[in-house]
Length: 140
Length: 496
Image (tube, rainbow over all chains, first blue to last red; front, top):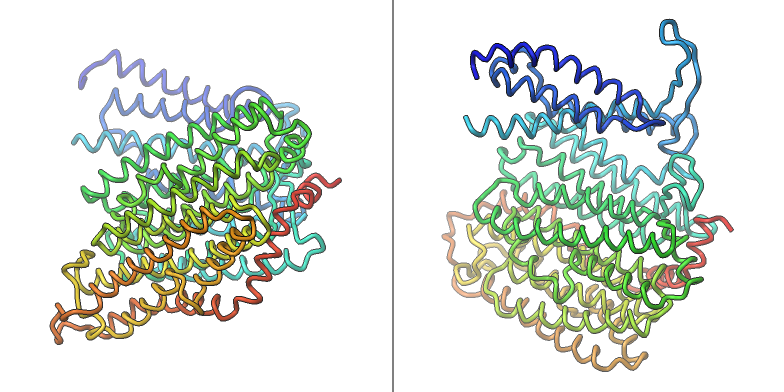
């Protein structure tokens, strides 16, 4: 696989398409099909595609992340969203939303559930990649 | 509405997550873990006090501001808060014991985060008022327990925990099936709402079937006869701090779930369901203690005793009178404390002698008198010798069974009591009497007191539970009255 030029070229393009679709899914969630979990699985699959078409070492030098920290960061973000409603005197996990007009994007719905979903996104990416890289490294 | 209710769930979850960041620094981990386990205990006690002081003695929280039958509710009644206190006590004690005994290699591989996630799951299971949420918290607890039970990865652990995982996976699958049936028949998953709907529908036909599936599921997790076979071997593998935590807590979450569902939801046909529970209890007690009598290993004897004692708790529910339920609740408190203490003693003797095989030990009373006598107190408490806590709980259970004229279960309970005493004395005679196997110069007094220090609070508690039987039993009767009258619970949640 080392010098598989067509695979490398297609991967480079496909990864960006998959990653942007995964982000689309993340933002579409909450009211439409999609969400943090499914978006993250897709993003993880894009990164796994990188691992498969290049090799473990190369990608590790490009993405020098320690995945367990992803899990912890995401959890704290998700929990923090839940706790933030407590600080304002509402029950735990109460969500708030507001319609706002942003430049470029136009009218969008800003919700605290999105922050929660981003937390989930980070956790799931961390878990999926941690599992896959652990199994992959076991071979070597 | 009281957000305070989420703290016993959120605090361990938050600490567990923080500890992931600090996984490689075991000293800081210990400090944070130790402080927060004590903070958790204080939170639990305060919550129980707040619930006791509140007008209905129930506090509820509608999570996410979604009103009751639709969203998830957290419900703290006296039973739930008592269980949260017990889990926090055992959680703190086993943690401090782990500091002394867990190898630092294990500490570096996420031992503490999963320890706290386990407590998250346990506390969540106690506090939730939604049966699907109960499933979720069961899974949180079980997944953490899978990690902790294989943690260290010795061959024995891997082999036995495989069975543990498979058993629990099967039970969880059935749990999900039972939830689906329940939702299809009643159209709700809120426990209070379920209680109301099942009463309206009448508990016959399919609902009886669903009740039995729930009994199967919780029975498998709580080690009821004939589903206890996974327990003795899988609790033998992990280090003592983990065995003690599991032995004290995990099966009791299953029992808690049985008591909760069969006092709140499936209460309308006790001549069917509670009779089955009664016979299962008899089988659990009897076969569990037979297993214990046949063993010659410290930890294995204790594991089999977990089974036989789960039988006593189920017996209280099977007899189904206020006194019996109070007895069962008192028994749960007594059992969680004493069983964890005994497992920790097993860990301490293992650390001193290097084995858990009773035939290879001996004379510890001469070389380690403190260990011997503290063990003796806990063992006698477990066997039900007055004035220790085991006596009063068994007395209440047997008295209530006599009152309800269930003489069969009385006979079984008494025989099991004698056999329990026999196997506890066997441990004492083999490990603590006879000629010492350790040389005088090998005794490390300082190390031993380090090991004993975390256990002493549990021994003091079992003595306290015995001498303060009057007020504690009054409290248990209060808990029993509350859970035997589900209208309270239903009104507090649905607000009618």
